[in-house]
Image (cartoon, rainbow, N blue to C red; front, top):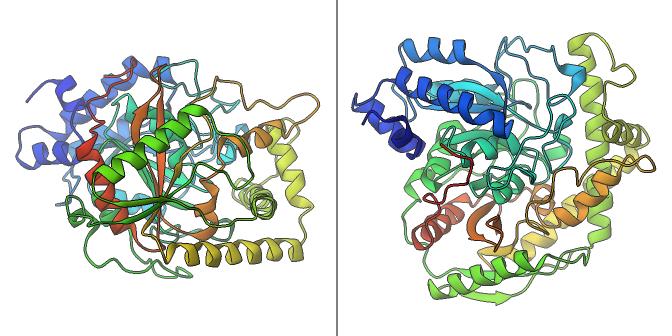
Length: 477
């Protein structure tokens, strides 16, 4: 096989197999990815930092005997530090910041044989569920470039959907893996809290809201990558329950007859777009057809308290982020360096007292116990991933009257995903449905704490029943 377009159609596992069999050289894969980025990125604005020299050097150097040796990869420009490469976090304030060491996750990516070819677009500090930072401009959805990619891993999801690479790094503090996976029609799993490490600079982030992983074309890539990166790192404050077997071995295993609850009612009672309801109802029917026991049910959640508590931690977390970064770069932001919505959230975070913060943590821990009690009777909870399909670019813009307008719109756009960040449970968005406009609409599956295994088994079953990899957006390789 020597055709770049053919390579682009393969997932990372298949590309690695070509390298292993010496049917293709890593440098050939890297050069093909570079050509795709140069051709398609002007339409998508998914990649904001090119790492071509670093990638070619890595491809020409000896590679480890590892599961993804020689496979090109993209890093989200947030949290995962690559020594000597700018990490702006989508902010003008940090546009010249270069970490002086790799994060533990990046070190594990390198040990897995992945070759980082660039860094992807993200909203400022990842705070919004859309990827439209002022410093780089909007990432555009390959299914309709007038629509948003979701966020905050929108650049990664757009790149994978367009087949620039078969998988890309992503992270998730309120849905930021699953939201763009839904918007861009790819697979996105948020692991259990602390499944992947955040070191060496962080033990946890935002009191456990933030998780690291990836968006992928295939389920098997997601599982194998999690095998390569997960596990306790020395000094971590806590870790996820150990899996019974490698996650890659779960893919293709019979999930058995699962007890699955589903709901199309949001915790706040906000309306859902009819496409999101239809996608969920069709997924529930498919699950019944596959032999699962499916019934309409949902945990009782005080939506107002959940949002209030989540936002207290989110705002204080942003304030902490900016202030801690000021030590790394030697100064605080000057006027105009933060976007107006970011500045408003920063100011809100400064007003959160220590007792208020701890009360917010306490409520989310109570929520975790309530949802765990509900999940004692079910293996999986199915919901829509989002409250609406991909929205027009600009929908999250602040107004002159309200700098927080984007955050308020986010409440209706992402009514379900923050639940799992609050409770620490694994969850995934699966691309089974496209609406009449040709836009992907994901469905959301929540597993028990520590039980990615069931999600991977179910995801592989859904992938076999309703394959999505052959679906290609108008802007793609």
